[in-house]
Amino acid sequence: MEEYLGISSDKLLTAGAETVYMVCISLFIGSLIAFPLAILLYLTRKNGMYQNRILNGILNVIINVIRSTPFIIMLVCVMPLTKVLVGTRIGTKAALVPLTIYIAPYLARLMEGALLETKEGIIEAAESMGATPLQIVWHFILPESLGSLILTITTGTIGLIGATAMAGYIGGGGIGNIALTYGYQQFNNRLMFFTVLILIIVVQLIQNLGTWASAKIKRTR
Image (cartoon, rainbow, N blue to C red; front, side, top):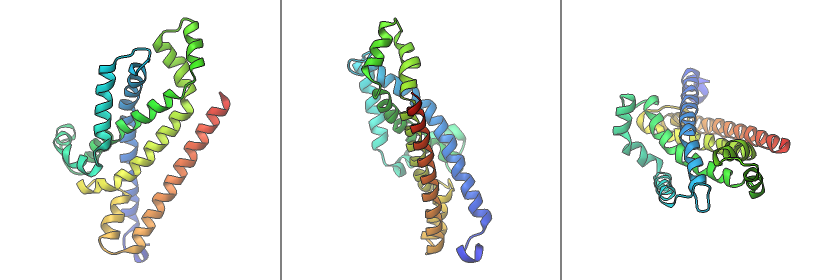
């Protein structure tokens, strides 16, 4: 493989492990942040169960500002915060901070959309049974929107895979960094197209798995 691609299989495996590490950790932490944000956005929206225009407006502004910031700029802007949180500005661990900041508001907005898909009839039925707003969210809205939430996580995972390629700017590593550093910058077209093909296959598998799981859950409801 080294003779054909111009890089050792060990480096490719290490890059693959770095991509999996960055995606999984940042997706997990980002989801923990995004989920309560989505609930707050849902509850405090106009005509929501806990309508609060000020809080909802502040959350919307923060989410929109972060989402509209190009990831490469965010990488640089959060370096001081990265240094405080993980003790270094470079490396795979350092890439987790901007990746998490990038994905959390993105997932929060998608999760909010998934929650809003819940039919009003379900909410009205829950209210007629005397359920509290939090009980309605936990026992009625979340189970009803679970299929859409799975698609949200799927979309977030795919978005993170793309973002990890730019994490190479701070030495984050990963398959995308291999494609840029050893492929594009060294005019190694074989390696570049090979790594892109790997990423395409991985993305396709994740999308198919997420779509299948979502459809299966929706059929059982």
